[in-house]
Image (tube, rainbow, N blue to C red; front, side, top):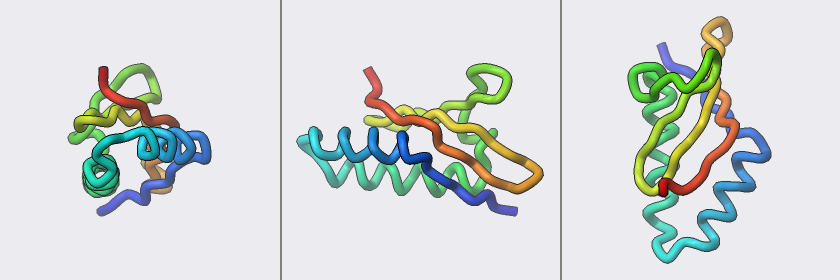
Length: 84
């Protein structure tokens, strides 16, 4: 079973800002593609729980926060930022 990965408008805006400021835009794009693949296959195995409904996945240079809906098999990316 695979999950459908949706990026919120805020997450897409944050990702675009990171991409525009990056000195290695191809790395940011490749990382976003990998995040999508990992979350669509198994969000719980590939991420970790932050709070009751909020999970994170960290793949340099990005940290992605997401929520999952098991009933609809949907992962909603709520925000993204650079790893410190």
